[in-house]
Length: 431
Figure 1 (cartoon, rainbow, N blue to C red):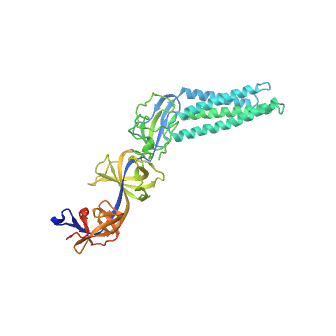
Figure 2: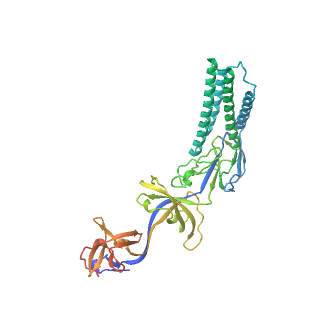
Figure 3: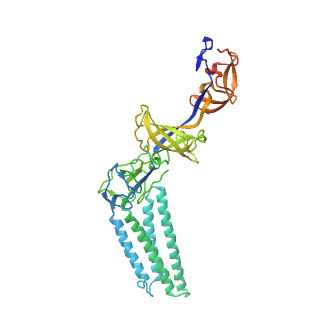
């Protein structure tokens, strides 16, 4: 409650401190996030032999979505199988004879190994998703090291034979081991590629046909999973590779030619929607798991959604506004309009504003926010005592948008200046 003063004190309004509930709110730009997403890409050059789903279809984990026909991959598998069978026959007694050129056999085996690893690395390097690409490259590196150890052992055995330190049989055995290992690894890589020609949904969700459309204005896959704003922690999974889409194109169809690493389908799990908010460093210490928020979407004007903070990033990220900010992840619940109508279900990537209720005080001594001013670093109010203004130092608690909690300096019912504090000085007569 407040009352305006007479003409001598125009613009000054007097009211009183009261008991009220005060809520401090931090506003943060945010974006709707999906629970998970996966982009399936072609593991080899070929054509889309079958496309078994339509855009927008709901699919289950493990469901076959498409089949790629790749004569090149099939031919590599056939060749690798023949080489593996030959290596096994050699180890069982045939193949390597006493008069064999040991060094020549080793050079040929090393060359075949280098070619197999180079082919595998070339395919892996076309995968855009860094997590999957790095995992595949690490697997290839481990296989290379394993073969290198076998090759070194064979070379040492051959040198021992040359120096007359051991029998030819030991060198033949070491070479056979290297040959079998190289052949098995080449076969495993080729078979893995052929197996991945059948694209299966790694997660349940909604399908989008196609892959990336070049665009810098639309959210990426990591964005839609909370990787950066605007958008949603990336858990992308892929068969043959993943590429984070900046938008989805529907150019892929049955019979279409694809290259190794070409995105074919994207599956998005929208069973649980969330938010990623960008909270300024000046406010982030007030935000913790469990804090509730009211959310507004640009796409649903007038609707309010409920959300709850799940986690707060420990490390900062560059703010879209040019400062330092921290990402806050929230779970998102249903919403409704002011008239009680249910609000529409958001889509991943939609822009939003999260109003985080970071602190609350019930039945607290409170004054209008405009009544509090600062002098020499001390929060103060103009109290009305004996009909005159007196500056009183106060301790502020929860600071809401309209009301401020007063921890000390005032009591409920005390009369204060609530508007026009800049027009008041000590001793100003007030009603």
